[in-house]
Image 1 (cartoon, one colour):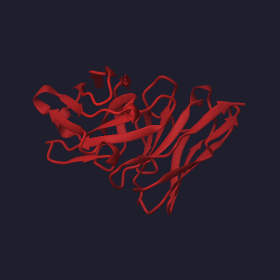
Image 2 (tube, each protein chain N blue to C red; image 1 turned 90 degrees about the horizontal axis):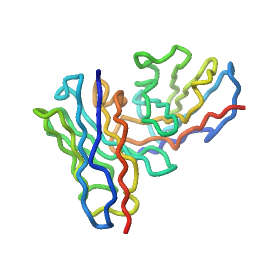
Image 3 (cartoon, chains in turn blue, brown; image 1 turned 135 degrees about the vertical axis):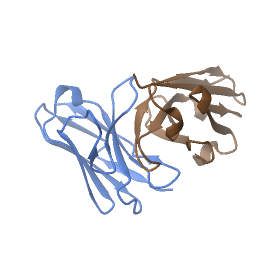
Image 4 (tube, rainbow over the protein chains, first blue to last red; image 1 turned 120 degrees about the vertical axis):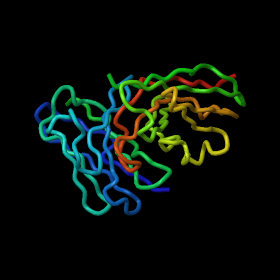
Length: 107
Length: 120
């Protein structure tokens, strides 16, 4: 199975900060990497698919990039509604696997 | 409105069975792969199973193989998860979701989730 390792597990940031979350795959997954945002008690929301494609309706402050087996989600200017938990997920091969999550908290 | 609504969750004893349903509306259900994802209380997301548009391909996480069965009825715009031989570790919120464009894409539409509790 492909292991997805996210870092950090949590971070504290202020409104307006630039935030970067990293996800590393245990083997090559091409660009089959997706990012989700989840708020407490809510279903996850797709932000980025295929490593860097912005899902329709998602603000442009969210972006994704890839370098080999390392993937990055960047929030260019953190907004109050962005405080949530973020998950990466590989869709390259079954079983599909998620990272353990990164909780973004208010500083 | 594009929507997925799960039902069928509840409290079940270890070794018991439960059938989850997911009703789709607002899109052409038969055109999309569909999937189930679960989340144990206070834990992260775990993919459970997925099914191709015509039901001809099904994939499962190892921990549910032989116990869970994913199926669909395109005429009823419905997705199902039959769960047998349930264990305490199956306790979770179960979400159904639509696979975005291809089997390698993310899950773009999610239901609200249904809680399954396995306990005596």
